[in-house]
Image (cartoon, rainbow, N blue to C red; front, side, top):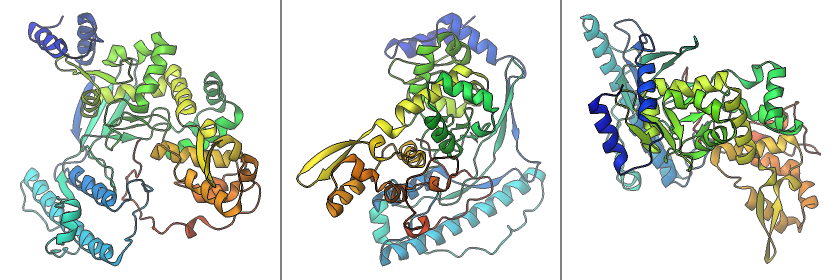
Length: 465
């Protein structure tokens, strides 16, 4: 039963907020389930003397994002570090790189001290050459984006193990290692797992799920091509700007604690209510009719909604594990993901405004882009950025330069269009997809002025959302 203190806290929480999604009996059952011995454990990831590590700070990552946004680069490829666009930006870049090297060196020394303290010995000097002090921050850079915080810190990652009553055990490590210039890292308590790749599922099982979701053969091939950039049905990411991101194309809760992830949960709750109750409600997670996440505090029974619920899921790895378990074992949750992906991100039926002379017409994407490689390219952009930009400007430019005004004429230039729209992956090289007619005009590398930089070992260079 709920204690009197918990019951009073629940009443206070819900009195002026959203309607309760969990009855007193539900709360008692959820808290009882998670308090059973062996359900949850945490431990250091390494032996004493090696537990402290150097990681990018959330504050430093946010500053890097603010810096790029101040330069007009808020929607860049997350796998690529944008190059300086002016001589002054090149000078800023040199200072930023120096400051970040200094921060990493200071954090390395601190990690050595803390590791030595853990085992009662004198600290060794960190490996490598000490980074020089970069000097004061340029005044105009500070005026543009504000004081640069420490971009690296010594942290102690923990391994979190969660065991369910059906025998499934899941494990996570927080303080995710990402590359030093990663712009989307927000939560040190966050974790990530790519799950079981959709492409490695038994073909018959995958076909049954996609048929149940109502996908035709071409849509299936496109989604199979895009999914390796995101994860499996059971992938989970709680360290970046998506807050809680789940599934084969990383449906994200975003800042409101709702987003596309809320739409997936709503879909399962509507289409398969009994499965939803078994997958989520009985473990302390629900969704309201607006698509906002709902989660219980597993210590007190307090009910959170929206962003507070998302943050509870980030902090409590038992709640995180509920999503991975559903993606691993629930056909209903997998089908809900596929249906939401088709509805929200498959771009064939989107209407794109195109300027033709003094008029603006709207073209259906599927009437212009007719190959699976083209559709995968656009879906990749829509999943990652939330829109199809710069497709409207690209088509308007073709209309201006070539005098074309209808879908068939634009479709004749599909190869050129898709080459220009390529984002994270070159789907024009995918043999499993149908391709636009005509030869490739130029290489992907010739279009981008920014060079990829290799990720640190174990990093995941993908933002949600």
